[in-house]
Image (spheres, helix red, strand yellow):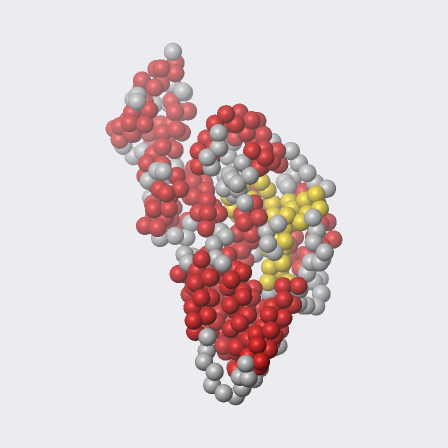
Length: 427
């Protein structure tokens, strides 16, 4: 069994291991546990489906940062009520349920990978092209792809619900008292050091020392570019100033911390984080601040916010795009026979149609309408092999309302008309 359990977790790790193993045995689908940084800390029952991922990691180590992918999914699960289904950059489907302690995610249960389409319908060649892999590896990857379970979308939803219930069970009897971890101790030390420096400079806490606005601007810049280390260092200085200048008056510090929370959220937005996600997190954090009762907890809480907002900007930029694209592709593959529009798909992935259109073109190389036509044409090729189905019916089956348009698009993409394609396959 793969077990990289850290020295201390803020949830019942033994219970989590047991739950993960039971889930895998009962569903036949892999599950594993990650920590708050996205690193796998327990993978009990190993199955053959991991061969596909291992083969790619062995050949192309930079193709997929699994920790970031898992962490992104966990954060999205927090945002969408405790569960989230997502696609990794390789197009495999996973689902995740976070394990929280004292209001913050300390780990998560992850299920998968699975396929929601047959291996022959999986967009393997496109994934190879997008990730700059060598085409000679296609046969090997196709072989390993056969080991990955195929699960229908409705069952994936049910499996996600079940994982969420299991995560809730892990948290149910959580009774450990909240305590500062090593990072929190370092933060307290850094703040104390800055306060001591102010005292050595004979600065009186009752005098009107100027607020370090330049450092605040540097803090916001660090958040906007994803520099966690630099941002934390500056935040410690600002907190040191606030504690010193207010005489450690808790209510005043609470209000100043609230101001910092809003500033950090604005910096994340400027860095390119999703507006809905940041506003949702902001609302959650602002409510939480009124339940905090001591300075140490307030410091630790603000540091967690800093990390979370910075993650939204930096760590998940590529992951987020990949997940959005695969969710859009899944939507198209399930509904290509219907009258679907760019607006329908952009609403499905919670983006504006203009932004989604640009993102889709950048990630796939196709504008949306061309990609939709491509899917429809590929589906029509299989139907054309059955001579009992008329070309008019095939055109309607794959979503074209006009046969002449279907013929024109088919010829543009294949070089043949549907009729000639059918005859050539017959010969």
